[in-house]
Image 1 (cartoon, rainbow, N blue to C red):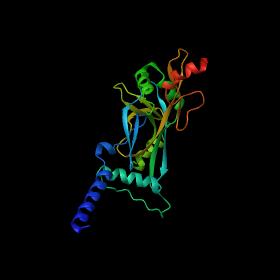
Image 2 (cartoon, rainbow, N blue to C red):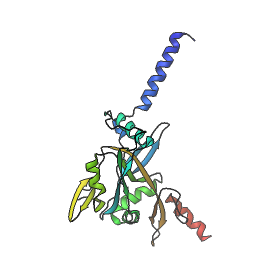
Image 3 (cartoon, one colour):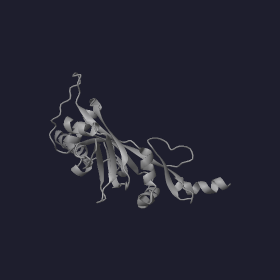
Image 4 (cartoon, rainbow, N blue to C red):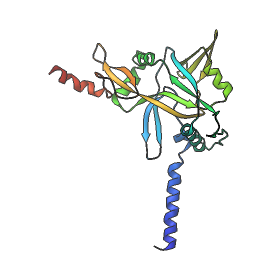
Length: 237
């Protein structure tokens, strides 16, 4: 093979790999807590395409726990900063015993969330979910914030997620007798986890969410709500 042709092929490979590894700012955006959507998995990355969020007319308990970075979590954090075109200022040294920490927000009261998803306010959400079994809900987010701010969330007497009057999800912090509402932190999110929906039927034979699961659905429930209709003729037989 001629040297000129070989150089051109190498240049194309380098350009292609660079294009794949550098997602746009929009693609690099990670979902917030309780976002509903689908994971779009490619060879190198998994993107979350949000389609909506639930309406929480009652507060759902949330936990906020500091977690020390390890090699894996810090690699994800560093990659997120690079993808956003931001400078990495946080340092991680594996040999140093005291590691920097990030904050992990997680939906604590999953039973309350499941109950609210079956309320009338979420009829449109459920209708959409019954038609797309690949949709999931974000159950936890991992993000970095300074120690002072992280301690505010971690030491709060109560932490809840609810929908505001302007139809936006917000966090409710209770410290002593004081109640404060803040937006769900999003800027430094670098990782997240999702839960799937397991379906059954209510007393009227309509689909309802029975559980929120990270794994397989329990016996008697279906991941795909459309299968509930297929199950009826079988049960009659």
